[in-house]
Structure formats: structure tokens, C-alpha cells
Length: 123
Image (cartoon, rainbow, N blue to C red; front, side, top):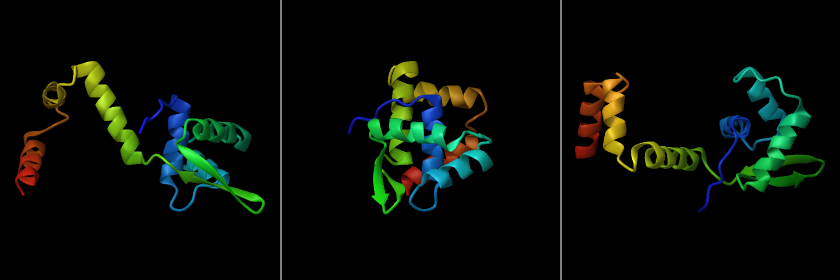
């Protein structure tokens, strides 16, 4: 499945859509953007991003009577996997060890983390 690249704003709206606890609607996403991400975009602005996300095949528009809901077509996990893969490919020439080594040197990955990863892999 091809996953199209998102702009920073599209990504934020998509994150708010993934954060919805039920079928996402414009009003729910606007509330999440305002309360969680401190964005006070007007519904018309968010609706424009919804249309872009429909075009990029991240969500699908569903009409129920006079209201609209959206079905998520690309999960948050699928998107994170794409970001991870693209990042390692571009910055580390497909060598994930170099990324892990850099994380370790920066203190982002501790010996305890490595031990936990190792023990989970052996289970």
C-alpha cells in the first residue's frame, strides 16, 4: 500500500483524527486540535485539511443524514512504520544499528532499554 507524504499541518489533523475515541467528525477533531494541540483553527480550515486527507487516501468521507463522519483508511501504526522506514532509509542508509547507536550516544536509549528489548526478543 502506498502511503502519501503529509505536510506538518495535515499530519497534525491526522493525529487528531487518530486520537478520536469513535468515528471522527469535524467537531470532534476541532475539539482535539484545540484542547490537546492548542490549535484554534476554524472548522472551515480543518475541513480543508480533511479534504486533502481524503485526496491522499488517509480517510474516507461517509455521510449519515445531514452529518459527515470519516473512516480511517491508514492507521497510526502504518503511518509511524512509514516514517520510521523512510527516516532510516534516508538518514542511515537502511542501517538501523547506526540509528540505535546514535540514540544510545545521545542518552535516548539506555542500557536498561537495551536489556528490556533483549529480554522481550528472547521470550
